[in-house]
Structures are given as structure tokens and as C-alpha cells.
View (cartoon, rainbow, N blue to C red):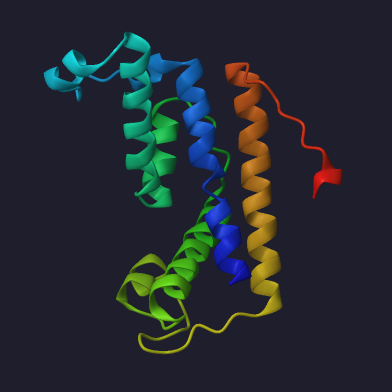
Length: 167
């Protein structure tokens, strides 16, 4: 369960993307408009329409796999800092989280598709060891920290300090 919760917290990246889009909404620009005339007419203001558009994009990204998020960020100049080895670890962590939440940790076809060189077979229990947890924490922390720092610098985002005493 801890593993699943930590991967869920990885959604921080999606929140970071939201913050970047608020500061640099022109990143959303594309050649195929996705705003309906109905949305334009119902919007109270341009700011409300922009907020709705940002939320729509963030929601769309959060439902896609990590590879799609990475590809979109790279295409938009958002500095998602991940190397090939870490990317594979992240994809596997997300796949593990999904079978924990949706399949009682039993390996399914979706898991094998995400992690094709897995030693686990469809129908087998995906056992987790303490090292799996530590490796996942280290990989996700590295990605989030590096991406956060580069994004703060590139887009002049405000850094929020967290009071550790509150925890």
C-alpha cells in the first residue's frame, strides 16, 4: 500500500505542469484548436476559459502513461529530467501501482505490456521487496527534484517552502 501511495504522489509532476501552464499559457498553443464555441460563449472571462483549458489538458495528461507525458513535456520545452534507465523504473513503478490497486498485485497483460522483460508471468503474484520500495522512492525523488528545480528556473516559478515541523 505504501508503494501505491508514493506512486500516487508522483502526480506532483502533473501539478507542476499545471503551474507552468498558468505562467506560460502559450505552451498550449497548437494548430488544431480544441476549444468549442460553446465553451467560449459560456466562459465568464478569458481567464476562466484559460483555467478551464489548462485543467482539461492537465486532466488529459494525468490519464496518459508516463511515456506520453514525457513526450508532451519535451515537445513543449518543459524540462522533464529523466534518463532511459530511470524511465524504465518509473514505468515499472506505475505498472506495479496499477496491479496493486486494480488486481490485488496479480500480474496481468497490461503489466507485461508496460514491463516486457519482467521475470513475472501473467497470473503470478508480483511480490515486492524492501529494495523495490527504496529504488522507486530514489528514482521518483530524483526525477521530481531535478524537474522541479529546472522548471522553477526556466519558468520563474515561485518556490514554496514547506515547514517540516508541520509533519
